[in-house]
Image (tube, rainbow, N blue to C red; front, side, top):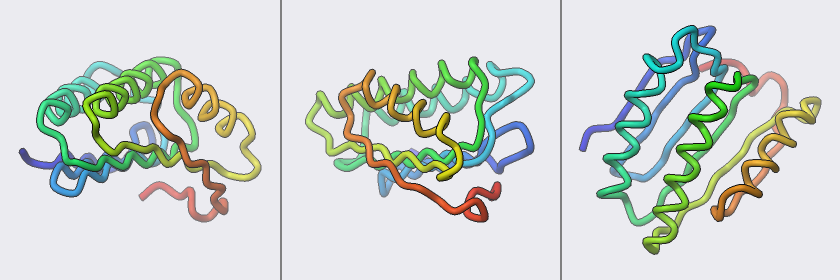
Length: 132
């Protein structure tokens, strides 16, 4: 299985999913004009990954903003991580947020409550939140 890489834009996040290492990174803004066009390849790829995952999966989410349609897709990915964990996989989420952005921290807390995957919350400095 090949990795999945999308360069970030002002409206879409960096997506860097590596099936060989199990490292998944999502960074930037997730406000695509056409949510299905952006998210369907990501969700399809992840669905394939779940059928043949690495023994360890680390999902790093470093978003400065996302809209409601992206929120639903992110939750779908987190539910897929639940499936991996139920199959015995070593799975965790790293949720990065700016110290000044309480809303993003709270959203991460809400997601952590909805899924059975361990979350680690990390504050970042504002200059670390620049889009890659």
